[in-house]
Length: 181
Image (cartoon, rainbow, N blue to C red; front, side, top):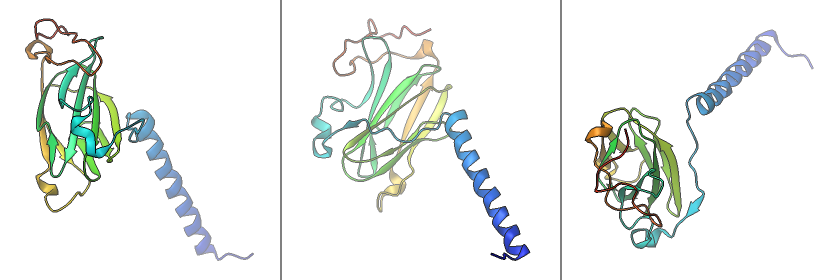
């Protein structure tokens, strides 16, 4: 088969660009801890708010002292609308939706996942002190631009442990005070 020189040059250039894009994706996945959504757990989207895992959305601690943040996406709102977490402490987010597909993004961090009704997305990350915007980065309807929340991250010495334990566990914090230092 006889391929013209210029066509061969374009074929090689496209091959190099594709190899470069795949390399960038692999580097982002491995080097920057960017992960695809985890859909290990399933949940009935009609019963999310009565499910023990999401009955009390917000921050909780398990028996081992690990922090969990449960978040529910609903029509143009995140429940809860704001959370406070300690800085430099790993937090596992458990996020689900009751209606349509949403995108959960903690702006300026690596905290991001796709939120699909019927599944519980999960990721673990930690933050530096400051205020962060929680945005929906997946178009979910006419009020999409109103779907945002606030994450406040404070130094561990200023943070108060949650009073409720993560489902099935005993609260690790004594007297409502944080023991992370």
